Structure formats: C-alpha cells, structure tokens
Amino acid sequence: DASNNALAFSPERCPRLVVKIGSALLVDADASVRREWLAGLLDDVAERTRAGQRVVLVSSGAIALGARRLSLPKGGRASLEDAQAAAAAGQIILSHCYSELLAERGIPAAQLLLTLDDLEDRRRFLNASATLSRLLGLGAVPVINENDSVATTEIRFGDNDRLAARVAQAAGATGVILLSDIDGLYTANPSSDPSATLVPRVARLDAQIMAMADDRSGSGLGSGGMISKLQAARIATRAGVALAIVTGKRPNPLAAFAADGRGTLFEAVSGSGAKRAWLAGRLTVKGRTHVEAGAVAALAPGKTLPAAGARSTEGRFSRGDVVDIVDVEG
Ligand code: GLU
Image (tube, rainbow, N blue to C red; front, side):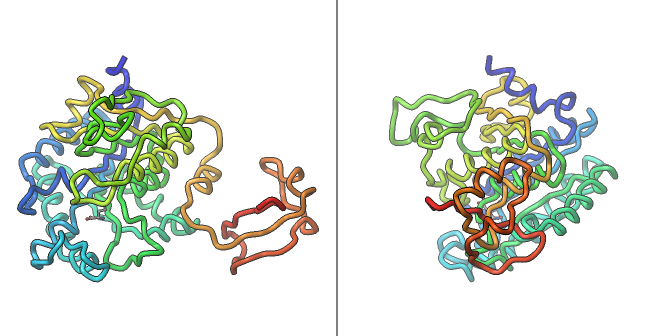
C-alpha cells in the first residue's frame, strides 16, 4: 500500500527529517527562483515544524542561479572554475530566499555550507552534528548546501543526494526525502523505455535494483541522476535512515506526499550503531592495509586486527583515519 510510504516520514514516526530540494525544482528555465513553489514547500515545512518535527533542508540551485547572475554558459557547468564562481554568486541569492520565506513563517533560517571532508573527518563530523542539534533545539531550520566554491573534483560530493544522506547521519534524522523532478525509481529509464514502471518500495538495495538506474540528470540543471540517488539510499538505509525519492513537481509537495505516498521508499536497515554506520557511509579512505589469509578470520565484526596479520600498507594514515582492509585475493 503506497500511502504507507509516507508514514515513515510523519512527525510522529520521524522526529528529525532531511528534505533535499533538487535544482530543477527550485530554478525555472530562465534560471530564476520558483518562489511560489518554494513558498508552498516552506508552508509544508512550517506545518511539520508545528507538529513537532525538526526539519533540515539540503538545497541545490546555487550553481544554476549563479550562472545566470554571472552570465556563464552551460548553466555554470562548463568548467570547475565556472561552477565554483557560479556557486558563490548563486548561494547568496539562495540564502536570501530561504531566509526571507522562512522568516515570513516565523522560522529562523540557518545556513551551513559543508565540504565532503567536513563529514568524513570524525571530529569535524561530530562538530557539525553538535551544531545541527543545537540549531534544531532552537527551532531553526538549517539550510545546507555543498561548499562548491572551495571543493575540488576529487574531494567533493558533487551531488546533493549523497550529501543529504550524510547530513541525515549528522543530524540524527531517521528519514530523508529527496524531492526530485522524477517521481521515484523506475524499473528502467522511463524516458527511453515506455514499459518502465514505478517501484513503490525497496526492502533491499541489491545489484538488481542498482541496475535499474542510469546517471543522467533528467533536467541537466543539477548533477544528481538516479545512480547518485541510489548511492544516497544505500548510505542512508545502512545507517538506519529511511529514504524516499518523491516528485517535487506539484505544489505543496510534502503535503501531497503525505496524502498519497507516491514515490519510492527505501526501507531502513536496522543493526549497526551510529559510529559503524558513519564509517560505512564514508566516500573516501586514507589508505589500504593488506592482510594475511589468517588475519581475515580474526577480523570478525568488532575485532581488532593483530599487528602480525598486516603484510603491507599503502597511503599515509594515522590514528582515527579509515582504511580499506584487503585480503590476499585483493
Ligand atoms: N550543490 C549544487 C548547487 O547548489 C548542486 C549539486 C546537485 O546538483 O546535486 O548548485
């Protein structure tokens, strides 16, 4: 029953919720903010806030908005330098909008611009987490984007889908809604395969599900295609966070989702604790340690690698860093 999909994200079941807003929803064809739509979404957020839910927004759109302000070609994505400049010029427009529209609804807005490293480094992750908790406790709505202006290709999320999943971990949220220009995961790309059907619920994100996606962003405005959404779902669900891909192409999209549950729900996987989930959701590692065959068995969950079991290492790492452990078969 699809309407059940929305229950996992209700204020009763989900005290802290992350909502990600894709560029294609926020910015129209001539690259200005779709203010009326955003106002409707923030009405939904205000209503959820009144019902006791704490909401964190992860908003894209800076690059698209900034490209127009700076008259850059290709939506600001012709080069990394263009994207970084566009993000800087667009972010200030974006923050202004959120600040104004949330204030009209009696809600203080707060902005965090995060880089990949801010969430991959344990100490910085905990700092961001503490800040988010404090803001949520004060009734503010944090509006988060990647700090694209300082991120370089190798060390950036590049899409706000995975950022939203990592932010959910930092915010202690139990739900993520990815508002998108598509209404969920289809069995194949619906724009090229007319027989494709919407998958309402995914209990296990396996290879068969991953194979349903391709990585084109439908609109060309953002960078997140279906693959980045599935990667986000993997990070979130393994951390015990439910994630839904939901269409934002209707007014009051959160209220509409609450009413009909249309979208794809990825069920949370219960199990590992918060620190393990944070480790599992990491996108970068500092090095590799190659181990003897015998050491693999000794490395049962929660066990320590005996120093004698390590054959060699690659990379530079120190206490607290995360490394891959590689067995003799690679
Ligand atoms: N951070 C980018 C922006 O604000 C968007 C990344 C994405 O498309 O997911 O424009």
